[in-house]
Image (tube, rainbow, N blue to C red):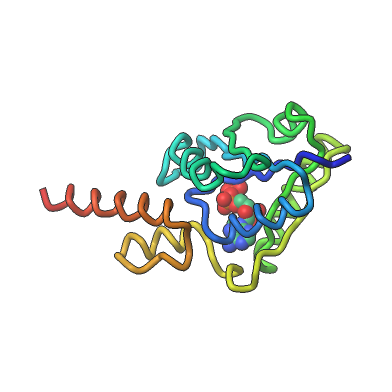
Length: 167
Ligand code: ADP
């Protein structure tokens, strides 16, 4: 019955925490659509296309995991894809308030869509995209935080920033 689940987020960039949620979701639902939000209000390091392409590269061999972008109302995107399930990740109590607000708002807009929360492995509960960006910016080792595809993109980005500063 619930064969398509939508996992929305900024993924700027995706960390091992996000990938862990995707892997876990794919053991429950037949198909996952990782949905990268085009949020004009959020200042992202990577543009929408880059964020989508990085995830597509990582999941290029998984037929049941698709990566798409969307803008507008999440519930409309969910319905358009014949889904009823939104997947979100919960790391700590600090995520709860925002996630509850989001889930209840979506439910208010569309009562027949459910939000399912998954917990990542403990080792990823402290991980956030912003922390990873901060470490990468300072030249720290991020290999235990992100997939090699993303590690390379972040390194390239910040080495370009550094070079441009020198000019
Ligand atoms: P958004 O801007 O929609 O919060 P994010 O990319 O920051 O987008 O997060 C998308 C979802 O993934 C959220 O539900 C968030 O709580 C979850 N998430 C982010 N980092 C992790 C992590 N390390 N482990 C598990 N879930 C995570």
